[in-house]
Image 1: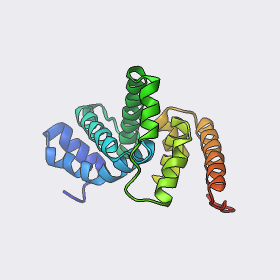
Image 2: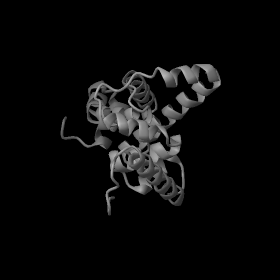
Image 3: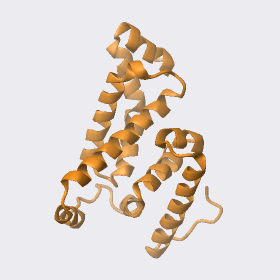
Length: 185
């Protein structure tokens, strides 16, 4: 079963209720989805695990709605994107300004110090949509077209978000002791 394509695994889950087939999909995409959330949450491992779990639950329950017009991974990232924005929306509705300030002051730093911590701090200065676009493009290596499909933004808007995010990150990192790499992707 390990050599079956994503579409074949989805078909097995939907038609035969084969939970082992969904297990294969989870094992294949668990690390990339968790990594996506780690960057979106600026290194909050517990929250990333919770959001990843919620993504796979939603994917499993909504698998019958997957029509194969895009790759399974694009469909799954779209769910992850929506889960993250639902989390942000709910958090903004229930969180007072005081709690946000306390969280910012006492946020637990990532377990790996140094450059990873600096990257999370740099990602934290970006707007959520910029962070999503930059994470999907540079870390998950997705095309602009796939990012547009995941975020629901036109490709030109995705390019604008990437450009603004790159400039903000470059400025932040340069101001914090990192040299700008010329001719980088």
